Image 1 (tube, rainbow, N blue to C red):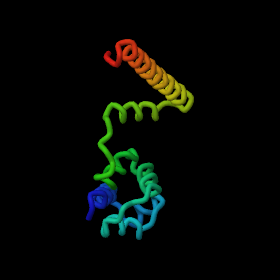
Image 2 (cartoon, one colour):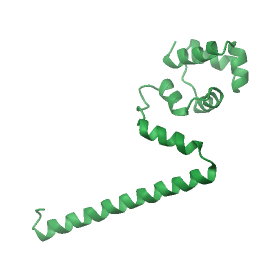
Image 3 (cartoon, rainbow, N blue to C red):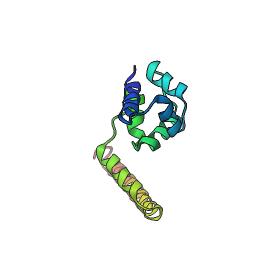
Image 4 (spheres, rainbow, N blue to C red):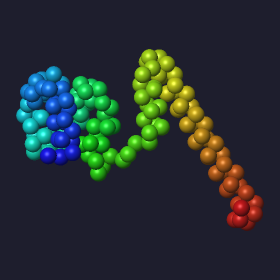
Length: 129
């Protein structure tokens, strides 16, 4: 059994359900669960989304379990911020996303301006800063 297969099996046991019942309730099939648990198959993104919704675990956590060597560990501050954003009503969430995008544009512009200043100083000093 793979790490993900172990995890999935644990979720079924935790709910005291059969594979068939768990699959039906989450919108999958018994065969899919068996391939994932017994054969160590890799889940599809569609499956992970359904599972995430059904067991109320964020998609990133499931991706990390399904593809441990391919998914980097998330920055906990970023994950916390994402959870906070996700818990807001849509209008407020969109406002804060726009605010973050504007701040990011400001940082990019500031970095670009610093780079221009730095290059200008180098030209004035004959290539030395």
